Length: 411
Image (cartoon, helix red, strand yellow):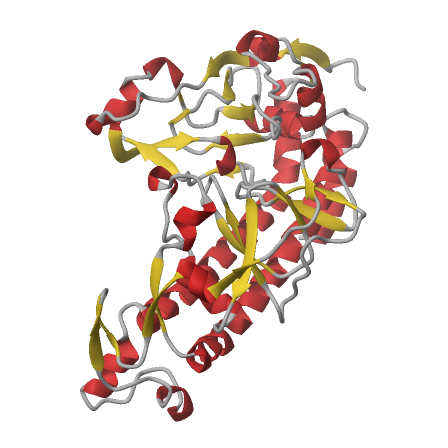
């Protein structure tokens, strides 16, 4: 390490802020003005752009000492999944499980500090001790030390890694676009019933061949949910999905940093580690599985073998295609209104078409699902390269030109 590098405490890098949750059941605190960051929002991305929960300006002002500005470094510091790091894209409030560093940008680069802390999840957990509910409080968090060079070199290191993060972000944004296309098609066919309305008016449904159009009825009938296409049914989720067992359950303590089988958690990032035992659930692009997080309500379509922690609940379609079942149940229950149990999810209701129509929907969106999986794999490979280079870069062991050459080749 160069003699220019020095060791600092986190509380020397800026102001440490511990989050706080606004009081519940206060109507004026409900709103969409300010992001409210919680641990499930840490999805492995460098920046937190979207959050599952938001609050009003009044809600934020009720905990104004916990408001942190854009560019702050956030670290989860309570619970089994502590030690995750991210940067906030905008001013936000966090809950009490998160400590933030409001960085002194005259001396330190927020992105460099983020990269340093993003590598130290196990270390941060170790500092919190081995209790069932580990906690790294504000004072102890501020005492965590990090090494860094002068500001210009910090910025150069962050800039060198930037293209990898930019490419990963682009792949994820592409997947979000593909996901939106699939959701739009589902809504048109199975929520707005556009093809049925077209046929009822004597028109040919748009964007489909005659064989697919023939699968849709040409009239409606009354149901408990109002008018629905004739011959379709109204069913509880539990009537058209089959819950699967994950087998042996895992947790953060039993997860390895690498291995054959990924372990899924309840957050957006999905994977908390790996093991080398038999997978709890087998899945593929041909036979995908849906996972529902029992407390966060995140849902994902999984196309690879996996195991899971407690409260990650996998299922597949029963009498319907599993990809169709994913879109039929996705986002139907929100975190803010959810009671936290599988039974509350499984009794929700949906309009259910014929199995042949769910299969036709799958045929339409299958290329999108496959492209999203390829993008995920590429993002994972780039993340692995980034995580291989970063420890050497932020410790001064790897020269910038060498790292830049490897990154340029990868992107």
